[in-house]
Length: 74
Image 1 (tube, rainbow, N blue to C red):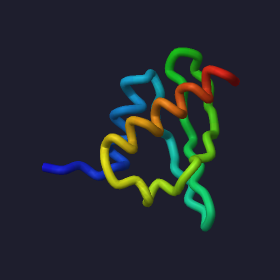
Image 2: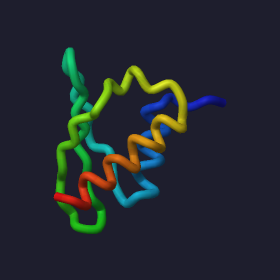
Image 3: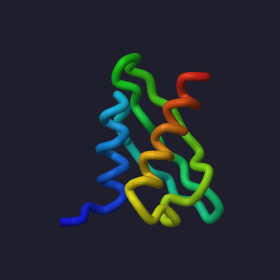
Image 4: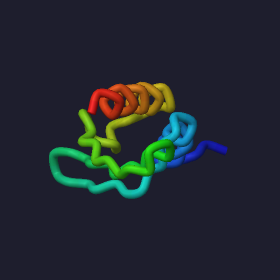
C-alpha cells in the first residue's frame, strides 16, 4: 500500500533524528516545524518548494537531506 508523501517525509525525518511536529501551508511556501531529538530543540524550516509538488519518495529523500544540511549549519 502506498503511503502519503507526508508519512514518507515523517519516516525519513525520523531516520535522521528529527520529528515532524507541524506543517504550515501558505500560498507561496510551506514551513515545517521540526524537533531535533538529539538536542531537544525545535526548528522551523522553510521548504524550497511546496510539499504538494513532491511526486515521489526520491523527492522526499532529497528534501530530508537538504533539511539536515541546513540544520547542521545553523
